[in-house]
Image (cartoon, rainbow, N blue to C red; front, top):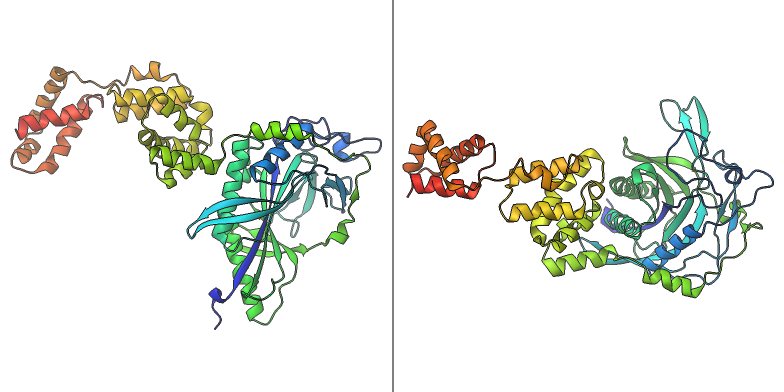
Amino acid sequence: MTKMSDWEAVIGLEVHVELSTRTKMFSACPNEFGGAPNTRVTEVDLGLPGTLPVVNGTAVEHAIRMGLALDCEIAPVSQFHRKNYFYPDMPKNYQISQYDVPICGVGHLDIETSEGPVRIGVTRIHMEEDAGKNVHVGESGRVHGADYSLVDYNRAGVPLLECVSEPDIRTAEQAQAYLTELRGIVLALGISDAKLEEGSMRCDANVSIHKPGTPYGTRAEIKNMNSVRSLGRAIEYEIARQIDVVESGGTVVQETRHWDEDAGTTSTLRRKETLDDYRYFPDPDLVEMVPDPAWIEEIRASLPELPAVTRARLIDAHGLDRKSVVTMQDAGLIPLLDAAVAGGADAADATKWLVNEVAGWQNETGRSAVEALPGEEFASLLGRVADGTLGKGGARKVLTSVLAGEGTVADLAKDHEQVSDVSAIEAIVDQVIAEQADAAQKVRDGNPKAMGALVGGVMRASKGKADPALVNQLLNAKLTG
């Protein structure tokens, strides 16, 4: 029986990024997510007679920023084409896109995998407008089996970047690492919110198989993956499916396949179109784009620190482990870490709070911790923990309240300040020893595990405000000294 290791997968990704611009790609219509169906669309987006498109300058700048971040060649001249096809969500019957002269040419993206670093080539980044959205009404939620379909044109005309990779990816892990790193770059650049679950970042995977040393096989394109995890699952399934087809004597056909998240399978959506089907030709309503080289250099100079550089800086400067840094990056929490360190906090301590407390709150609430917790407030909280003003329990309560918008650290900390007065805590310790005489005797007899019950009793009696270090010191002095 042929083993899976006898085959090699060849994978390329096409990632669409909806740009965070004030208006759409070619019209003055507001570019906002959501809204009642067909309320955020203009005559230009619908391509009605007599309307003319005007290029969104901010979208062009965002495209150049993305290209520079991926070491792409910025084209001195680029051009928009009409990509012709009929589909209900494309009211003009064509999409304004870029064909043979995209704004960004060859580049690359370096990723980290379990097998080491891998460089993935970037073929191009081109600009285009998004299509509308078909809503299929019925149990399936898809065109097959739907009772009827409706069209919402709110998304029509939203500015898109399409980043096309070279077929350099060989495993699902590499594909996931590529998409994760690309998303981190998009977020760092501030050109999109890159929400996979909302469709502002979408990824299609082209997958084929072959035996090393033989020509590449026929590829199938997979759509409808709305998370990094889904991308990995879909690729793994498709690789196994194609191997099974070939080893069973069949032939893989070039087609577009739908990923079913619940079933964990891909299925035929439509046979893949070719370039001839789209009948590309230059859009007669739009002139060539010729960006000023000086403007490109200004954009280059304004690029922020990119994720790979951030990771290296934090690991080298503070000795942080890579896993924690990646967790903070994925959660968008690096600004809080930097603010805490600038405020005098220990980087390792700040990292533990961010990874264990803040990231979890963000996941549960779906809110942005960076928006809810100003960096100076986080630094202030850690400072109070470091100087003993707040214990960890009290600090957690203060943090939760600050994140919930209930006040500042300075105001909220007053109700949770740690008690370090020796006489006050000693009185509570004596009371607990008397109340838990059995546990106290076990400690005297050499059973250290019983100490936990006494410490817990003192903390409860002090409403969590007693300094734990002082509590342990007094109990040890009275029972084991």
